[in-house]
Image (cartoon, rainbow, N blue to C red; front, side, top):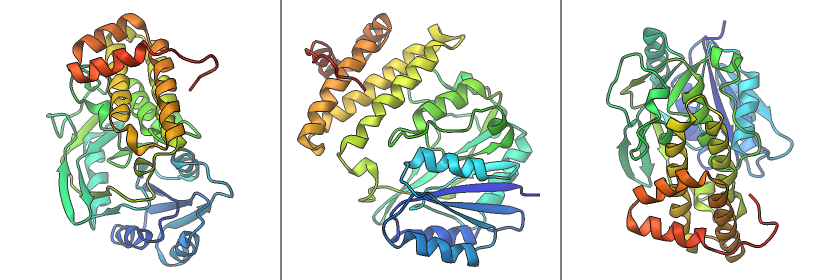
Length: 325
């Protein structure tokens, strides 16, 4: 009987994969499995994982013949998982020794659908603690109630899939899979669905995941067209939230967050390749027109002057026929 399945996608991370695998070894247990999904890497990552399959207790190696992106790789891992509980780790991050045993104990003690945790962000030699944005810890909570308020950072803004652990019943109910093919912001539709459809969750103050920020191969550092998948991701968030039984209550949060993300990308548009920057502006203008306009008006009125002005200017931008997300 497998107690915990750890799903770890890898893509061109030969520099970091050994650290990740060493930390998994320091978390191994007889009833844990580590599903190592190589997303068609072109460097030495497949060789590193093939060795790990032989040497790491509980390792299961799966290789994609075509690159599908992080969401698709995680889904491959979910489909292969046999554990009563599931969790995620990225192939360039690492763990404190014994962390998964503590995390498993936390969800078993609370008896909830899922548990979220804090994490340590690492940038070069600097480290900083990032807290889950909810004050109540170690108690059973309602996931839907943690989505709001609209004008503050809440549970759905802390979208890191690896900062938590999830009961298999979420897989059985179709809640835990990601949207196939999303190249960035894949956690956003996922976290919203999780909080709309799960029945219970808890928060614990464990610090065992070390998130490596600023990796050159990470999509957050690359200004190519794949970054624009955030528009598809947030279109899905708004669309699905509009169909929710509490749409009137939840849509302001979804729309306001979407606007904040658009503004963030526009504010750092110089990091994009010129054709991608132009496409970002056009697609974002169309996205604003797709949003419920009354909810959008309220969202813009609630934002600071700089962001609101940037978005209102974009909203008035002429859009060529045929521009779509």
